[in-house]
Length: 180
Image (tube, rainbow, N blue to C red; front, side, top):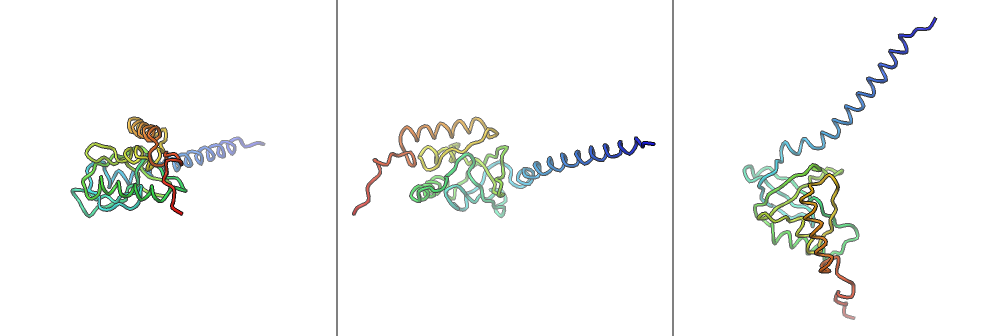
């Protein structure tokens, strides 16, 4: 005699396991966003330090002890990237944003896979991310889930840099030749 209830029990267990896997995946995705929003809300911050050509250390204006490194969102400096351009980018960031109050704007994508915080940095309502791209010191690296208005601004900045042949887009013939 067959026992039909056993088949139903296995079906129920498989269904419950599937639901648990879906819930775990959803929690894992959600946990990548929640901690950032809890302690790093969008707003005004003071630039404490320029770490490298894409990363700043910001401190909260109301609670200066809260510091966080922020990687500029929507731009990239792929390897191998000329050291001259990296140095120019660091100098430009220090000149424009160094030890000033800036506005941080977060997007849907807030953390890189390796755990770095991402954001758009505005200096006097001017997007620093797009400024670096417009000077040819970085290239656009946007994703479809990023803010469309800011993506458009970064893409337009890259088009300006390409047409003006600035930075990385400069032709090899326009570069100064090393002395012998």
